[in-house]
Amino acid sequence: MNMWDSIKGVIFAIPKGMSITFRYLFRKPVTEQYPNVKPKFEDRYRGLHYLTRYPDGTERCVCCGLCAAACPADCIYMEPADTPEGVRYAKIYEINELRCIFCGMCEEACPEEAIFLGHEFEFSSYNRDDFIWTKEMLLENYDKIEKFRVAKDIKPPIRQERREYMKPAQPLD
Ligand code: SF4
Ligand code: SF4
Image 1: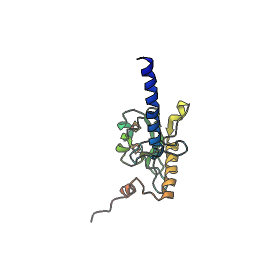
Image 2 (image 1 turned 90 degrees about the horizontal axis):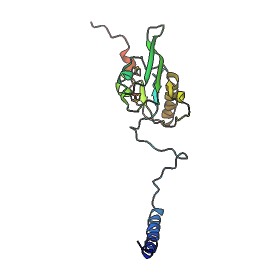
Image 3 (image 1 turned 45 degrees about the vertical axis):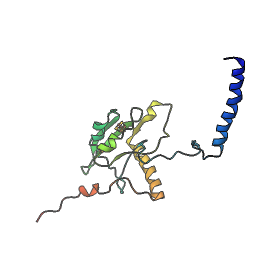
Image 4 (image 1 turned 180 degrees about the horizontal axis):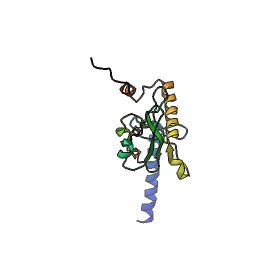
């Protein structure tokens, strides 16, 4: 390429580039103004987990282990215990969010509708230990989500009838 070709290239390239700039100047921006404006995710987006409660505040998780069995990343750990009334619950329930691949298999496997993946994505840290989310943290996450849901009058994602199954069956006459 000789010098004249180089000059010609520059002369044509500048108006061409500016024409594209002006064309987009009056269009609706597609860029997201994060972190000033939080992005809107689709309903199916899978972010940070939360453990749900019944309306009376008791935990739905019965520590059955099905979520851990279904997890392909082997990142759920739990230890069961019984309440004085004989109700099984998770004494320890932890999810290692660093190992998690956010596949959603745990929420699919759960028979109690106790574990879900929410829309929270801002939980980065410089400390690896901060990514071990304990039962208390996961329940607290639910409380936060539930408060927002009630304030916005959004339909609950979980069925409420599980508690009904626990009632003794009526005797057959
Ligand atoms: S979303 Fe997938 S990888 Fe993460 S805890 Fe659930 S099953 Fe495991
Ligand atoms: S979250 Fe659901 S599947 Fe996992 S242990 Fe609790 S009840 Fe079982």
